[in-house]
Length: 116
Image 1 (cartoon, rainbow, N blue to C red):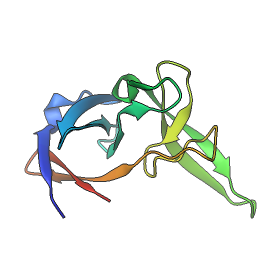
Image 2: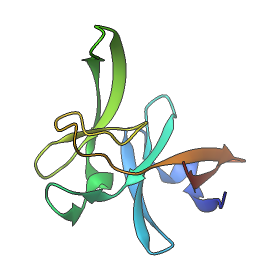
Image 3: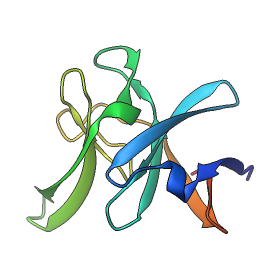
Image 4: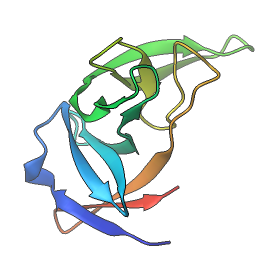
């Protein structure tokens, strides 16, 4: 598994994202207020633009087919506002759409990502 150092934790303001170019692909890295880190493709398939790193972080409750409720953190696209699960990349507004998600590791204040 290849890891890439992206930036330091202090480079990402809480509740925002940054974009990094990794092996020719734009990756959006997000930091929550609780310092949880997530990484998804930066490409928004609905607007066909690389903008997700500028999206808004939020939370909602999702109920699955069995009736189990789960709290989900998401990023809402800044263009058409579709929401993507920060942990999985699954679009909450269109279940047929899913972004690639990446594992994020914090190593001595360095934010590093790897393909999940």
